[in-house]
Length: 143
Image (tube, rainbow, N blue to C red):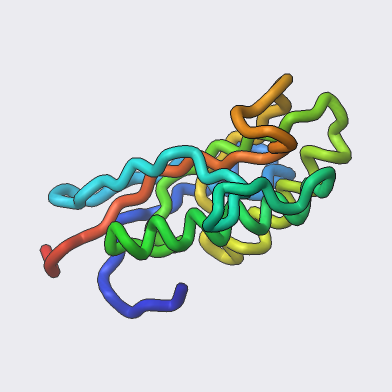
């Protein structure tokens, strides 16, 4: 996640808004960047089985792992992510927080804009977490 290539994404932080949010409030993408739209990353292993049954943090970690693989296959990495949406099948803020902490920690200083949502159900049996993302990459240096 520490590539030295030029970045297409600039995170925008606000001094006029609360600093309580653990992410940038906006992001911009340089002209000429290639956008990468990821399908929702699910907590599935290679055999299609849901991992971390009943464990929000474990499922979030698997989602991040799968998202990182999909990004790499598209020529991107976590620091190329423009925004995320983290879906958690729960009505409890504690559960949303457990998933969010894993995602936040995975992104480190690249605190891309994000939305955290509690939802009623997700697509796979025993699935509690899903992460949607958009990334942007520069295929060649454009200054």
